[in-house]
Length: 482
Ligand code: UDX
Image: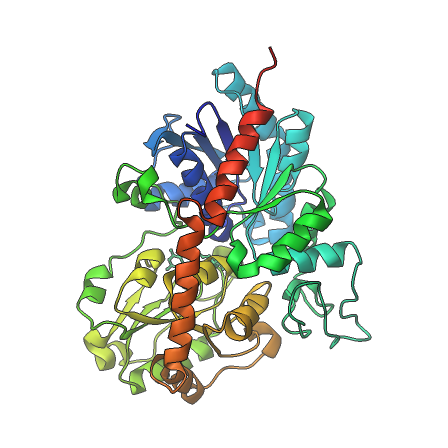
């Protein structure tokens, strides 16, 4: 059994966009026989415990041929501390607390007879690599964005190709084996006009520490970003192991489908909307969700709501309360909206997104193009209306529309473009992707990627083989010499 005797200790930054892919990796490792400890600050633990049926009492939950346990650590700030609204300060605080807590946890695991075989971290907690090195524990990094974005940050960090500057803000960027990117198609954090400099810096920290991990893992697959993955592995001098789509558990490795449904770390409890979807005809429902962070302007919510109210389309719309650090007001739907749409529309605060995208009634996905949503849409064969806002989302939208050709673009990037997309435009884009003259072609492309994704994770596929190699590599590192 490949993963037997391995204890993989996974450390995630406490946000949904990192927790999801890292836990999915944990599930895949556990399915192969590993003991997995999933670790993130208690700030996320509070929400995760409330929304899911998991325990963090130290006892592992059996999963596949292995098991998973959760370990939340105190980040040193009171849960209600106003400091938490200051994201740059919070990045530093997690590092300060983590550099003390993680060594303690590593000792505790060894004392309990469960020495750690591999420390795996997501971006934003790059200090985990330093801790791994100081304990001589093998370290791997799970890059949670696309390989194209990895290449952009790598080339930017190493000054290998020119990027837009204050003097030339509209410069195009040509990365090797990546289609030419306009200035507004680059990961927005790398543009000189970007205001979230601290996010750029926290991502770049990973590239400063890149000599430590023995490999870089990615939630993408070879068939999707092939040449670029090969090229980046070559210049890194270490394999990039693509394991995606990570959310696709291999059922043959599990006791039952129920297992993977039960082991989740959502920050909100998903509302049941599957019965409602069951009641709708095949390919008739527009699913609208903007991930866990993006908070639309109220005017944009009004325009989307009015487009939906005036159309005849059925829709499932995730209207989530704003993340605390956004300091924003919850959205309000226009008066009379719910009465007007009746059973044609369903509003939820959080959906079981993977199930929604896999549902036969789902026709298209209006998405902010976070990388997890992008992979989930591609691997489910669902056409998209791309509505990116910032960061990697603008690059993902470019790829979905121009390279993978699975949808239409609502705008270049909400924040970059700085406009509210009017209701007529929203309505005509939905129409175009669901029923327009190009709808069949878009759907055929989406189905092509779904098949490719399924083949990548199936036994013998590229991601499957990479996972086997990764597990064998950890096992080799941990062989005790005779
Ligand atoms: C963040 C960044 O915003 C994004 O740009 C980056 O690519 C990843 O990190 P987030 O905005 O939360 O992520 O979006 P996304 O990457 O799509 O992750 C959201 C996750 O939450 C997905 O796995 C999605 O399935 C899940 N989700 C979202 C639900 O399960 N239910 C919902 O209602 C909404």
